[in-house]
Image (tube, one colour):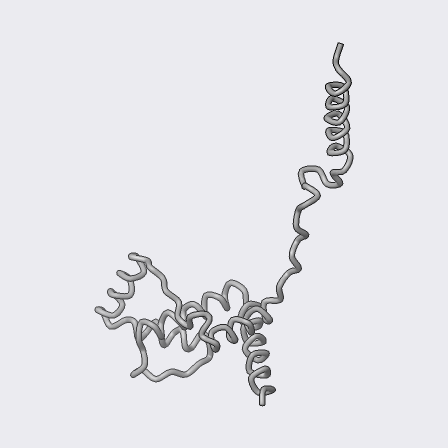
Length: 142
């Protein structure tokens, strides 16, 4: 026959099991789970990105390592076809450019913009809005 202490311990264990089963509101989610964060507006996030770059908290350059693209650009430069690619990107974006400034960096900047415009024009609109928000915040400072 169990002692009174053993019986009390067993009762507490059973009670704890029952409490856990009944206090879980969402299956698979504990009571301590963090609430889902609110979605961040892309334009506002871009404006914050400009501010972080301006403050020196984020770099203004992008780096990518891709041997295939590096070989492609080396070939475009060697065959003097990079200028044609850059001119076509300028035309696609309705921009003007000076042939003296046609570099790999120019090509990459333009080609990323062309790709984003083709994939999701709303992203470019959000970028424009974000830049406007940042510029407005800078103009508002005295």
